[in-house]
Image 1 (tube, rainbow, N blue to C red):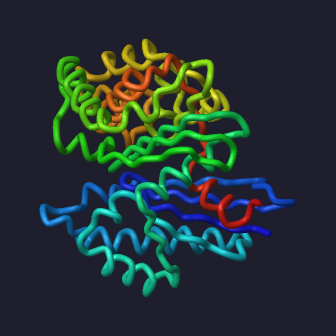
Image 2 (image 1 turned 30 degrees about the horizontal axis):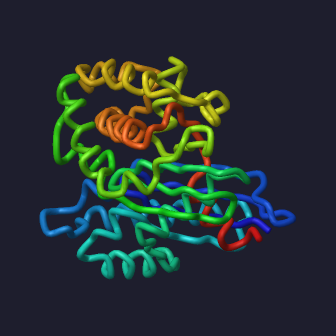
Length: 298
């Protein structure tokens, strides 16, 4: 059975088209568009009319691509930005009218659980998912999640709160992220030999490319790559003083993330430092896989 999941994130619109065979996800193909719904929230937390129109058009295009590939069912869900939106109902109605898809708006905890389910394997695991509007942290084993939380610190959210133009600015954002993490920090601290930490989202895949100095498209070298705290701080200090124009010249940096990437890396560094994580493994699997696993994999 071929199915698809479309996720409306704060920074990106993504789709996974996959075959479900013998209770497992097989032969998956990924799609991505830089949509930035969070950046389209105004001071009253309303998603702009232009963004609603753009989202409808892109989601419809993804749906048609999925159907053309033989998908029998297309699912649509949204995370932090839509969760925060004051005009969420208008957004949901516009999408259903334009695309025929019912939008499932995930709570923060549900988002954390989906990311954990998508990235974890059958061993004790800690999960960090850094998105545009929020960061999810979870821990558990296999399909059992012992604790999960969603924090209001995403790369786009902090980008709007505090600009970065120097190493000192970047370290200040690390401090800000650490302050946001502090109320839940003790819940997730474990000894390094007890748990394997995994990271999902564009911050992680971009950081893995930067650490290795490889083009960001080389996914086979990014999935399951491990980064240390010193790796993460080094790339943060490397990028922080660079102009946007100079960042765009780096082939290891996805162009759509050039402006917000340092904020995401600062969040990552705050999490690794605060939770005593010596190294973290990058996974290309996240809430899209988790969404399909929850519905089809038993």
